Figure (tube, rainbow, N blue to C red):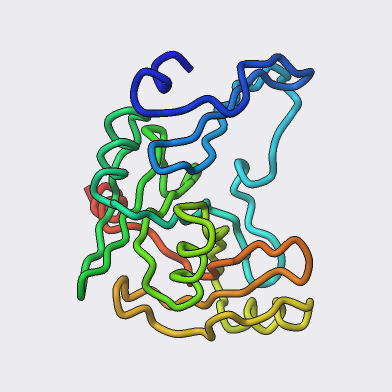
Length: 202
């Protein structure tokens, strides 16, 4: 916590001890919420950290996406201050998306991803105008994106942007909004960053 507070963060919630974890919350330099947790109970697990694909579509929560005002500065901050590593960068037409992960990334067993990106789409531009830089979407990947998309709509999610091949990343994806809670879902086809693919080949 001291390391973050002396490197551009501001305190949101001071360090506290809880029955299953200890933790604290800060804002990053652009104001996004960063929660640091140390699990203290051996049996306590959070589903998204187990990476167990569920259902016929192999649906899996792999991380989140964050809107940035200054994506280069924030990429530098997350890699230098939080010791994350950059897996892939996509850039075209003045827009950019950077894929980050932690040092324990494993494309087979521990593939948590963090997308930093500029506001390309109208709904993202509106989010940025209304609320500033923020975690803008939960990122789910699936082995059968058409089936997963149909299932999401059947379950009551609203389509924000239909399935398409992203002109920036080349990844097939679509955006949905939860029927309650308001979270945005970025649904993508199964994706393994180029750097991870090269590491597997080696």
